[in-house]
Amino acid sequence: MARSVDGHRLHPLLEGTVDGDTPGDLRMYDFDLRTGRYGTTWWTYRLESPSNAIGDAIAVDDHRFLVIERDNEQGDAAAFKRIYLADAADRDHDGRMDKTLVADLLNLANPKGIGGFGRTFRFPFQTIEDVALLDDRTLAVLNDNNFPFSSGRAAGKADDDEYITVRLSRHLHADRRALQ
Image (cartoon, rainbow, N blue to C red; front, side, top):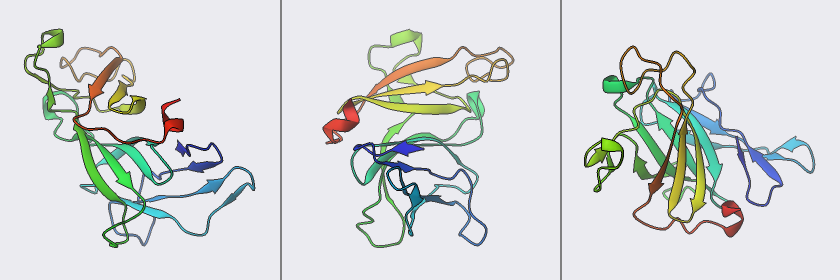
């Protein structure tokens, strides 16, 4: 659930498709904290695959959100762990939020080989569940290990919780209130 940058609204993003909707389409609602009421419309976030899941959503400004989308795998089996910038403005008028990839968590550049992971860093966890804006180009991404069940780093060995920072290739032009 994302909180609006002005703090007056909540935007719950459902984790599953509502009966009657297209598989893989998730609804994001608008709840006004001042009136205690939901708006009459919702936005549609389309998963890249109906079998994917969302891990978190946060507001960047009045109509854009960072959304973690991931498969249900971990370790070497993990194939899809991404963060998208989803725009509710629907500029292409297809009825869904426009999505722009901002980070592929299985293919992060690591030119200095930090952590001994080589030139490419992978964040191969099943439960990547938090993203936060540190500044206009830096994200914090966190994994909840569901101890002792997550074994994304080493098969059969319980993972530690991990926290990484990801430097984006371009600015998000986030509302300054999203950075507080």
